Image 1 (cartoon, rainbow, N blue to C red):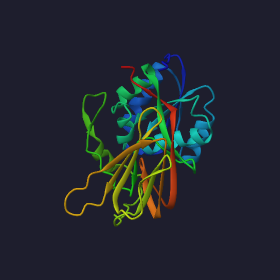
Image 2: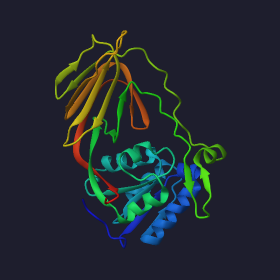
Image 3: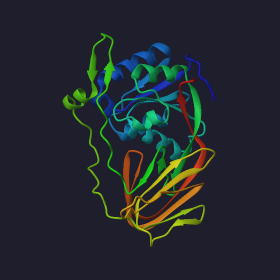
Length: 278
């Protein structure tokens, strides 16, 4: 794992949704990063400016201050520009951050900012489909509803605690995807490295795919349960192909589709995320 000197130059890209959701955490992160490194702060107003800022980073190491969508957006842009290999990405999670925290990023603004300054790069596997869409954490078919995050205290300099739920209530909310209605049983063909795991004649409740270790994806298929709970089917491989009739899927925080066929391949160690050294 590569470590970084605090004298290294940073490009801190603060997602607009983070500024609306929790301005106090954004301020804390900016103060910690600016005190510990030569940091250029960028305040894009939308996805286009976000992409331009990331593309013009030069030799600066990019730091995304934002939620899971902002993290996925940054990785997607770097992948499509074929610049993931030489870029170590950092994130200070603000907002909906279950994905970032599941990858090992600290949840608090101070701890996450300190990890940016003192942490080390860890190479992670990536799921990529034929349209250059990426999956960092979990792929779900059909898309399960996202769970609401519980209110958690956000420490501030004065010692008081504000609650993100209160901040979200008072602040303007960024646009969100509407809830996806729960479909009936799915009939899908799931193939792993060209071998059929389950075919169209077996109705399914769900298919879950996650990047595993060593360039393999972990696949779990839950057959439709009629009475007694059915035993999930599990397998792993480097390529997963799903075929069916107009199915949707959730890749991390985004719902995509409908599609009739999609293949995800594992790129081993494709991207670098800066995490606490310990």
